[in-house]
Image 1 (tube, rainbow, N blue to C red):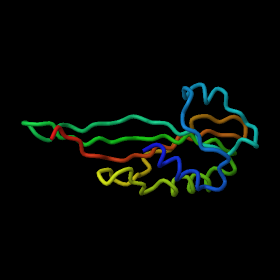
Image 2 (cartoon, rainbow, N blue to C red):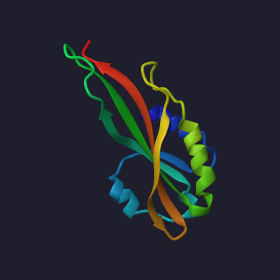
Image 3 (cartoon, rainbow, N blue to C red):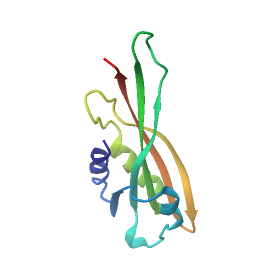
Image 4 (cartoon, rainbow, N blue to C red):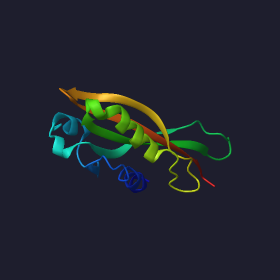
Amino acid sequence: MINGVKARLQTVEELQSVELGHEVLEAALENMNPDPATMPSVLLYYGNYNYSENEYKMHVRQTNEKRLVALLFCEVSDFDDLQDKVVKSVLGYCHTQRHTGMTVASSITAKLVGTVMARRIEFASEILISQQ
């Protein structure tokens, strides 16, 4: 799923890079580099998976909400239009026929340093899981 979303994000022309998470979130934020040559960029990683209550008594059947997080690094002045493009590129993406199309679940500023910000955008997709 993450590779499909990465490919979608790479279609946003303004982004300098889209990388898969390879460091702890706190380290990525702590080392936030305000160099304009490296921005805007996205660090993409898996977020929380949430599971619904079991629907049946005789066997297990649940909904699994899978989340992906796009950590967007950009200039504050470019944020609004850029976030819209990032969100639009991912909305509706289906990993498999069993998954629902991706929706945006939340967006919050993770860090702000001068004129540079890191914005945490969460995307969600659901899939039905069962033992049968």
